[in-house]
Amino acid sequence: MAKRLIDIKKRVDNSAADFEDYLKNSFSPKVLSFLDNLSKKTDLYIFSGVIRNYFLHILENRDIDLFMDGYFDIDLFLEKYEHKKIILVAIKYISLRTR
Image (tube, rainbow, N blue to C red; front, side):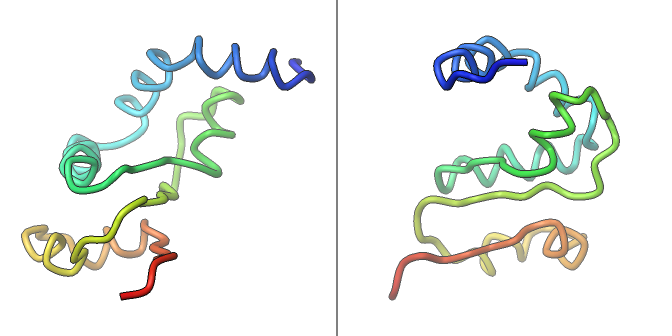
């Protein structure tokens, strides 16, 4: 197990393509499409349990934690999604900016 920060960074950098495959195997095409569309509106970062599960080789994920860096009208964005309430449960949205 990597313990030095430089070793951890190398392991993470070398895992990018694998992580993308992991996401494709762990989430439905609808969720992946949602993430793709959302990433076109704002910088999007995945964190928390999905990252842990990737490194532990666990395919089951009950949700996905996202950080969005930028302001846009998320309610307007979500209007086009049929399963709005399900998606909202899966997102923990924190706005660090004031309007």
